[in-house]
Image (cartoon, rainbow, N blue to C red; front, side, top):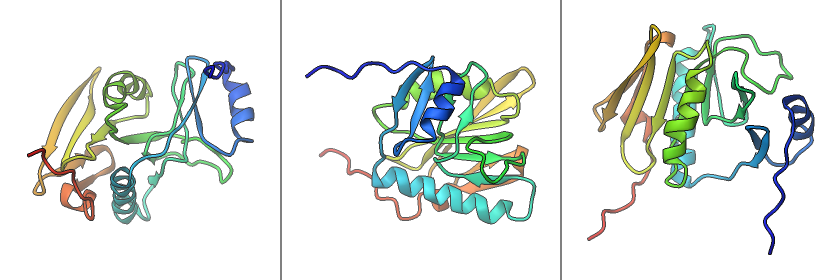
Length: 189
């Protein structure tokens, strides 16, 4: 069986084409890439983060969005983070974040390295982004990258007593809440 041809598009072509598709696709270096689904643990972590952020940000200028909200990267790529906190004012029919401030990805074993290298660099290149966070789906662990002047600092959060801090939106999320209902794989005997 032959591999499918790589579909190449400009940003405008992609935005028009993708709006008519049944499945989500990212645009990476001019090439369209189909998004795949996540595990139950991945979805629970994403859902818990969205709910926790919604409860804390309600009534303020920022709001969380799930994985259906696009984020445009200055290099022309388009991504679908698992959770985006947008502090802009997207119009009702917008399909991308107006002013993403926090971007959160739940790591999958097959994309973990890619997410924490290429995607991290892309998210950090967005001028409005103050925090980029990565969450494990295999244990209570998160890493938050925070803009610090011209650079970025990272802090790891580990265990049920830890709380991930996002000072740019004045929110801290306890890992016990993020991982509520998530079952972790057993350690090999």
